[in-house]
Length: 160
Image (cartoon, rainbow, N blue to C red; front, top):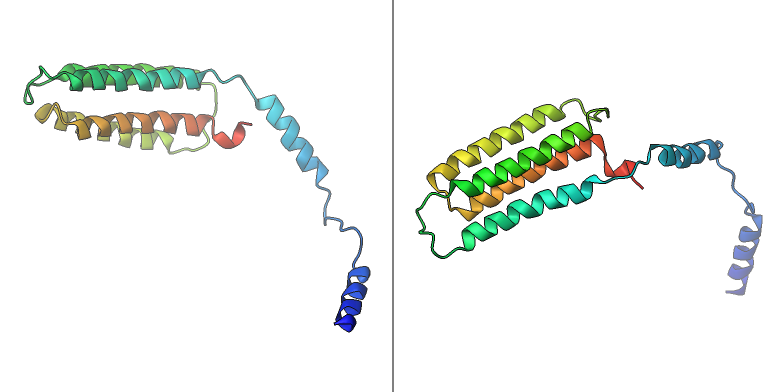
């Protein structure tokens, strides 16, 4: 065992004390640090987005939790309120990001697909207006649209 320890010690001593990278890394580090600081802007939209999501959720909960409403009574006000709140939120985001370049070219096509999914869910809700699963799906599709707009214009990897 003593012989093995000597060999290992010799091998360790033969290793270089420092390793140098194959290229200079500081320009990239400096660019990442200064570029991130220059691009960083105050982000005031998370509060608006959170408020925009809470209001429809509370409205849905209030309308659905009322025990006086018969099961088959149409309740179009919930869907109308959700849609109105979402459209307002979506318009605000699009105005806020109108001067920024999108990171993906096909994001509007994806947004159109989500809008058609929302329309299909709304059509199903006309037949079954108190279906909680459909209401949750509609809210989810609305949230996916908001997330898409935000991800394309202000992705998380750009924020520190």
